[in-house]
Length: 331
Image (cartoon, rainbow, N blue to C red):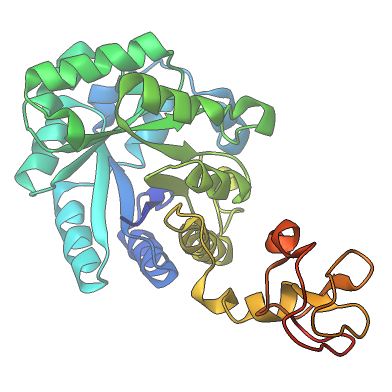
């Protein structure tokens, strides 16, 4: 099964339907499986005095509250419908992360079959129960969480009505951009094994190296922020891939999928002809007469293969030559 690649548009549309459509164009052209936005009502998400995260302060007006910033980034129901239809026409799946109960209901009513839970909601019991009761496929981001919190969230989702095999947990770090020393990619694999759950990676590092490494370690889902231009105004643009980088990421992931193979150690079809060329055979080191005893002085091992394998050396030593051999002739 192929890695499911989510191109995370997030709020990089800046509240513009036209920018959102351009982001869908980019994600589709890159070959991503899904393009994901964020669904929320600012009034349900943050108090009017809530502070921004440090990275948001660094990328937007520092005097602006989190509430006012979020208000400008809301997508209406009509915009959702338009973007869903636009995504269908571009042959890419539309996803969105709901950040409040009204948004969960909106996405349910719009027919979404996959619900992405953002990291900030992993300790929100009413929210988790709400989504769990829908019995849909769930992608659970786990930034800022320890293993016990992830396990607790999984238990809530399952007890509320979602099958565990329909849940994928994404290892994540919520700092934008995430520094390499904070990635802790091994935790992704350990979390999947300890909790016996499908796992993947939601990436906020700069570049694409960690995404490729995550796929090599077994990630079934990769989520990565992207933008039209990293210099655009908005909280997440600077920690996002530009279109050419997104293209490279998708190509690299698909190449790694091929390179991982099936795990069975055997020669590939392409290298089978090399066996006779590169391997060696037992050959006559000098001229040998029929009946002469074969030994280390008149035998050697050289290319090509196809003759008697050097692995039979001990069986050959001490036997009599069955015919005359010229120098360098295969036995």
